[in-house]
Length: 324
Image 1 (cartoon, rainbow, N blue to C red):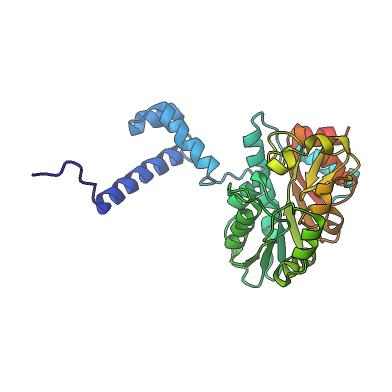
Image 2: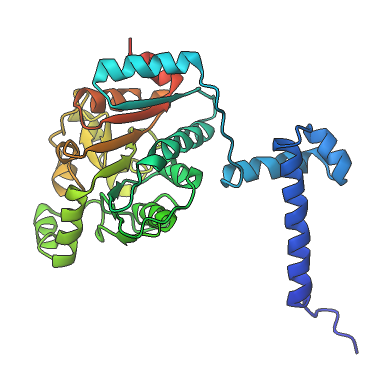
């Protein structure tokens, strides 16, 4: 008797997958290269317009499509020059502001990847932070062989994976340049100051922290205290938010909470953070802060005023507000 529950043979499933991938690729090509509207693509491929919309949007979000616009926006270029002069920065990239926060992070991340790519010469040490913006930066970059280089995380991580954790982000950058990767294999906040000190006596961890101080290039983001913040949404920080705000905290860089002047606030989390300190960031020859959205304006301003970083990637609305 025929088994009606038999599974499709792997070969047939693979062929079906290939056919679906070809259909999606064709839809994306027609939209981004061929200049067809989504309705025209739907008519040509026998799809619904809704499905075409989903295909092209997903391809962009997953980094499968790279768009390069060679014509600079005059207003953004003017802001870049003003920001360089105001905050004594080596380089600035300003991208247009968009209303959707996730899209804004993606656009800023892509611009950060564009800034970082030519800086990755063989033999360099790259220090990496975490977050959605840096994940997008990695997705934007082309793979290149830099076997004499190495990558290190600049901070401890979370106990769960999200694609934006420090371990995952550092791994992705290392994969892109074919380099060895080193991790701060510890939680971002230790249970106590004493446990932090004990962990730092471990040879492997001490070596990674040494590398974090000796790297040539750093790329990082920053966080505010809102629910959109990866760090502020963790249990350990969320339960401390009232005390952090009372201490004057307005956001963090590498897990260290700062006040509006860029000074670390007096709070136990700052004594227990397993990360490179903001002051140590100043020794980097090249450091890129990739962050935007008006919710992060005050923390970005604090970091710039304290001169912790040398390069900035942000959006137009934040750039204008920084100059006011």
